[in-house]
Structure formats: structure tokens, C-alpha cells
Image (cartoon, rainbow, N blue to C red):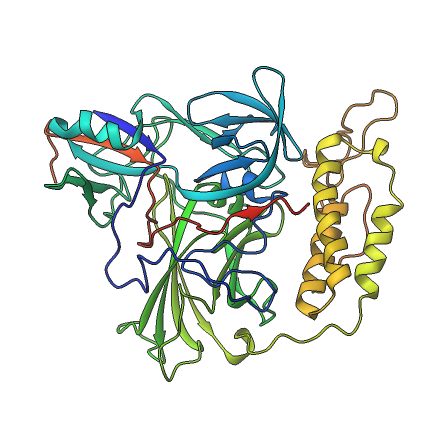
Length: 455
């Protein structure tokens, strides 16, 4: 028997992952001026502009509103206009305002990322009924879903189909006190979805970024290519293994786990962006500065594990963020956006651009570090270049000379600005996918710090 479990609790830790069980918050600000240094505090990018969307691919979130209501968010409709709750209810959502079933509205005040949605789990049939009292279950044959389509990122809807060989499967064992313990994840070749076999990441490239610390990280690796969107939609956790000077990658000196928004992120056009932050979740061993040999493993639902080996040099390690000396490029791209006419573009592409525009305006207002200004400039530039014009005669999306994403074959949109470079296999076991509060890489994933509606 198979199922998915939603919004559960701890699924156990992976041996050797640094501070895997720490879910405490920190009142210390990082180099970006954000409270991101706790066990699993969320990073700068997880604002209401983007966090509720990107997080809904593989995370659960609880929304709090100004009138005291709580909503357990599981996903979105394909157009992103309806929020889907864990009980299946769909409610209209627009810019932080929720329209309730009775027609009243509630305004978002904060939200909290509370765990990975879908973790494959095996449990004894005799414990199933009790297990379902502790964890919300979606059985095999039922639907799982997440995200909504935005450029390279695609929403998904699959039918659960977990088996004894499913990659990432954990075993749940009932304890004497009635709680459950979970094994480490297994490496398998079995599928998670009825619609397709296990996937292998393809058409991706990785880049160890030059040291900037755009979001407070000291080390960053980006994954791009045509295949990054599919992988990013299913990405649950990342394990970073540090070998220091051991080029053979035989003897690890430290292992770290990261999750969505602390510090994993996926951008709609700029790739998967992975980082390590000097925080409670990552402290380098004495005598090491982060340079040397690393392995990075992406754990994604329905995928084989994806491991990237890389070497970090001194040029890749952030030591102190450089202050900004010139904001002219950011000012120019904001001015370019100001000069555009909303009526000329599709609503979806305009809304995506406006999100980046608002963040660019914020970055210009603060304008403390060069990395932050460069990142905002690059993102707004890309968003302007991705705008999709409407046909003047029909008011619909213009499809001539485009590849379906509002860009020409060369990747430039109709409106553009210059690019800115900156244990059982028999019927004694029941299998499930569980939205449980432990990351596939082994660390608990509760984000204790609430995220304010700052937009």
C-alpha cells in the first residue's frame, strides 16, 4: 500500500551532517543585513514576492494573516492565482490578499516554511492507522502537485507510486512512546510517480561563482542549462561534502545540509542557486577556509541523486563584501523599466518583471554592497528581456518569431536592455511520500523565523 504524507514532523537525521538537528533561530544579521544565520532561518530571497511560489514546489508553508487566521499551503493552481491548501481547498490569492470561501478577505502578515512536502516512507501495515493520526497522508494513486509555471520553472502534477526501490525511501518505526523514528534515506533506482520512471538530471551545467556574497553566502554554486528547471522543481535538499586538500575526495572533513531558502534557491531564468552561509548550519573546521575539493549532491523527488564535484579557489570564497561605488547601471535599468508600458505586455510576464523591479528599487535604496547591486541589476535586466508583447490586433500573446517563452531563438525578448554582466519488501510494509520536517540531506527543515510581508 502506498501514500504521501503531508506536513509531518522529524524524519531522522543523516549521519555526519553538521548540526543536522538544529532548528534554532539567530538574532545576528548576515552580511546582507538579514537574520539568516540560525539553524534553518530562511534567506533574503524568501520574501512574499517569491518565497511562497518557489517554496511550494517541494515545501509546506503556514500562512498567518492580520485577522488571526492560519492557512496550510500545499501548492498553487497552474496560473498561480489560486492557493491550494492541504485539505484541497482553493482560495484566491493576490499580492498578499486571500479571498475566503465566504467572500471575505484576509491580509497576509507572515508565513513560515515548515518542511518538505513529499518524502518517500515505508511503514508497517499494522502501524498505518496510527501513523495517519500523526501525519497527513496521500496514498499511492492519489495526486501530488507543486509550484506554478514561470519561465524555466514548470509546475507539476503526478500520481504517487512509491515502492521498495524508490530513491530516497525512509523507513518509519513506531517507538514505545507512540512517536515515530525514521531511518536514513536509501539510494534506489525506483520511481516515485506512476507517470514516469526515475529521472536523471540532463542538460545542466554547474558554475562555481566568483566570490560576491550576494545573499550573505560565502560559497555559491549555480546550476544552469535547459534541464535546470525540471530539476529545480523537484529539488528537496542539498548535501555539501568538504574534503579540504584531498583531491581524491576520500576523506571528508565536514558535511553540511541545506534546504529551500537556507540556502537553496531556484530562479525562473537564472538557474538553481546554491550557497553555504557562515551560520549555525555551516561552520568550517578549524584550519580550513573553504578552498579545496568539494562534492555537492542534489536530492530531488523522482530523480537519481545528482552529484557535482568541484574545486573552490580563493577567488570563490567570500571574505569581506566590497562596498558599492557605482549604482548607475542599476539606476539605468530601473529607468528602462519605468519607461515601459504595461499594456504592451502579457499580464504574466509583466507581473514577473514587476517583482524584480520592486527588489531592484529596494536594492538601490539600500545600495551598501556591490554584489547586491550587481545581482539586482542582472535580475531586472533578465526580467525585462523576458517580457512578452501582446499582439496589437488581438490583445493576445504574440507568437511570431518566438520560441514560446516570449523570446527569440537567440534568447532576446522583443523588448530588451543591454545584458549586464555581473525494511520489508512484502505486505508487512506500507510505502508513502511524506511531507516531513527532515531534509533528505539529513537536517531538520523547520524555518523558525517568520517571513514578514515586506512588499
